Image (cartoon, rainbow, N blue to C red; front, side, top):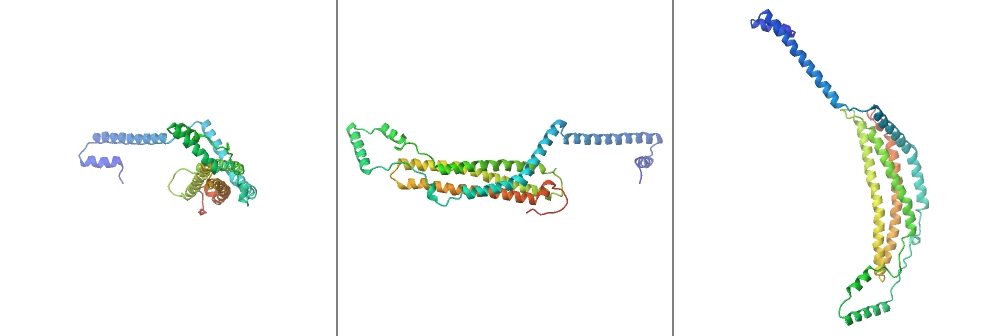
Amino acid sequence: MLSNCEYLAVLCTALNYTDNELIILSHRLVKVQNALINSTQQLFRCRDDMASVDIRPESKKQVDDFCQKLTKEAEELVSTFFPQKIEELQILLKTSFSCNDMASLKAPLDIPIPDPAKEEAKRKKKEEKEAKEGKKDKDSDKEEEDSGPPCGPICCNEKVEILLREVKPQIQTLKEKLNTVSMWVQLQIPKIEDGNNFGVAVQEKVFELLTTTRTKVEAFQTQLSKYYNERGDAVAKAAKQSHVGDYRQLVHELDQYQYWELRLVILDISNTYAVLFDIITKNYDKIKKPRGDGKALIY
């Protein structure tokens, strides 16, 4: 195969170029070739400079220390904390949440039942007063609506309140631990490359499970706040229309319903710890070394 100079010589001979003209063209060809090589090298250097970030050594050390600390904490959560919490919650279910007599959850409602005869006399007296004055006293009606019940303040259900105080810290603890494990899994995801991404798919599947679980746990807190709102409305109706027994019964039904919901929350939290322990331990190798050898299936 001819070199550039040999090819140029054959071409110049065919075109009747002299030897001096051939030398000049050869030198020009070399200069153009060198210029192309230099331009290509500069482009590659610019690409490398754009692809890299100037990170100070002390900054990199700070991030590395944080990642190592987080990894150690997450691995201790899976190996030690999760099993301990499962056992702790099972004990809680057998003690605080083992009520067999729902009547014991009934909180007293000190709302007096009105005497029909007295109420009728009171109503007639009011009508006579309005008829005598010739107009309806709107301010008096407003004061009656805004006034509290004749029994005074009505307390919440102390037994349910004690259970709520036990459940709330459990929900918050699970949220924090989920955040730690989620961050640990994210930090294990390697650089994006073509091929050999089965381990990365396992990591993404585990992270998706953690995200879904966190959303479910956040709904528990909303549920607790909803109880106070619903019970408060029921108590207000029972106090305002104290002659309606259904409103009184509604308050007791809400207390019993909340007890069973709190028990289910504890069961869900315990099950969540068990599922997380199971999925992470079964796929630990793929989470830690997603591009390692082997083709273990995700469970």
